[in-house]
Length: 262
Image 1 (cartoon, one colour):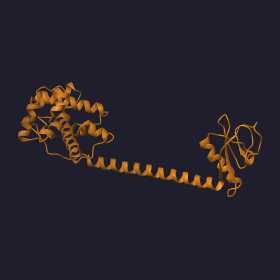
Image 2 (image 1 turned 180 degrees about the horizontal axis):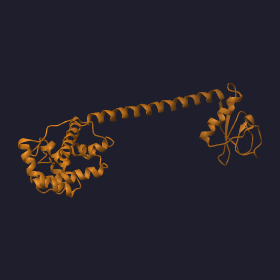
Image 3 (image 1 turned 90 degrees about the horizontal axis):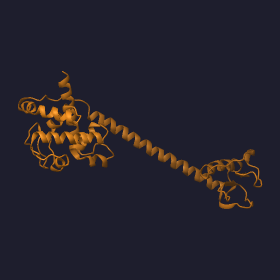
Image 4 (image 1 turned 45 degrees about the vertical axis):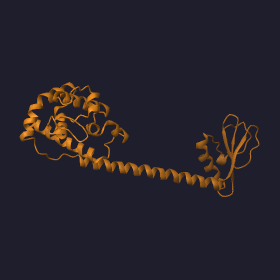
């Protein structure tokens, strides 16, 4: 019995009177079904290829000119291989499903972490400093296509509106620019409030454009660097400092938005 491509080759009747041919990968499964249906235990299966690349399966040796024997296997062995392939496919699908489930659960957990929570309003000396720098913030926001509330939230988180703030890592000023970042965005005087805000606003605009306006990724990039966000597949890096930073800025941003609307 032969599963073949060309009727001109001599002849063995196919199982059920059906002649069948397809690509090598698909034909393995089709021919296996045909052969096992006839004699699932003792039959041998022969695979031949002709000079045109057509593939033939038979449960008997073929002697037609131009056919090359690729392999001979028992039906039992083919059935076992088919079962192994099916199990492998099922295992891989189970792994994919597990990853998708884990990702879904992680995203749900992130959504819960970053949900809105009440924060204390700006008051006292911080309010005085905020009022002093508000015109510079509004102006920089307009130039870079940002909402001023975002700059306020970042500045409140980074420096509490203190223009002389200096971190242990060497970040400077209202928006805590690192010297390298300041140079990258053409800030010549890092301690000048106007230039500091301008440089920070330019960096935020760059990050928003880079990460498709995903504000969480932009904030993560501002804190940890855009390279870290990319290394983790455009996700917030698993650094507690960065995760807390993003959460804090978002809370201040939402508070700014609510304050402006009221």
